[in-house]
Amino acid sequence: MRFEAGLAVAAEMYPLHPFDIQVHIGLFTWLGFIIDDLNAELGPNLANFQSRFSRGDLQPCSVLECFADVLRSTTDYYDPVVANLIVLSALAFVNSNAIEIRRDYQAIVPSMEAPSWPYYFRDKEGLPEVYTYFCFYRDMCPDISRFMPAAPEMGKFINLTNDILSFYKEEKAGEVRNYIHKSALCSGRSPLEVLESTIAEKRRSIREASGYHVVFWFMMDISKGLWPDHTYKEKDWNPITLEEALENPGFGYSTSKTFAEKAVWSFVENESPGFTLSTINPPLVFGPAVQELASFDALNTSNQFIRSFILGSAKKEIAPTTNPIFADVRDVAFAHVMAVEKEQAANQRFFITGGCCSNRQIIDIIRKNFPEYKSALPSKCTKGGELPDKVYKVNNQRSIDVLGIKYRSFEECVVDTVRSFGSVQKLI
Image (cartoon, rainbow, N blue to C red):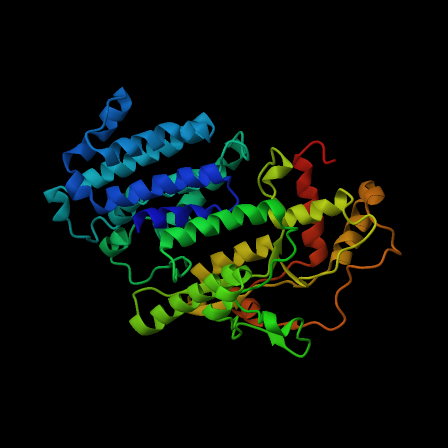
């Protein structure tokens, strides 16, 4: 299961990274799991890992030699400065495991005299810097300088909420609460087969999808269509069954996500663990790209859809609006942070949406705010793309009351998204 879990970390945490980089991160995480879980068996070899690695010597066991190979290949995907930061943090991780298995360390009991020790040790063994810098691969971020101020906070979030490899440090720290990330529930096939097919499907969807057929699958009853008499809110669940999903492979993604969330809620209810759970359920997510774009290939799928209008995709015909609700990525990010920080958010689902939207609205907003793209847009008399006359309603009041979200308008979202494209010198 360690290998499958390593792939899951890469696919879930870095879903838009190129496939070869996801594999690199998956291999790193898989080997990290082994080192973290079997450090007692690896023994003194851990303490000597860094010196052998520095000299380029062969490691005495296959696990450590494979880990060394993965570290050496980091420069294939990352700027040398970023690769150095990743490797240095990885070496600290190995050293921490070497310390953990020593008898004197095992005798340490957390005390008020050294309250920061468990968190310091978790910072070394939990790899927050590695998983922070994994975000900034070379093609997306040729120079990390401008993003360095964000790195400490990104690492702090990973460190203080949950390290990737285990809950051991939380237990040493005496924590009574923690936050975990969901992962898909595997059924029927082996976990590896499911993960491999999921990754393959993600690659196909990124290449082929228009980006506008994403819906809030955790909650939506697809069989009801636009369901104008219904108001969606947190109590709603996608009612699809495993049998229906097996009959229609296109429902596989929505089924796995729905089952995964239901499974983790069931676990919390039945096991009463020492942590609480909050889940964030957005629909289609738009919003400005925060990274400096080296090319438009680095854009996520939904923003590629907005860009397609600027490139003239709707010049002659506006496609029907198939997903009439949206969320701004900044509001979704804020929801995640508030769900961690606010006590009253514990053990609640949150439906995150800024309201209704349509393809025609996107075009009208671009026309109003960016006259330089007018020639690529359809005329005002071109039909299509309107918001359906009869469509379900949404209730996001819980997210407003509990998380304190002040939702951005769709116009603000689209305008800021288009402006973010300016980091690429030539748009068309």
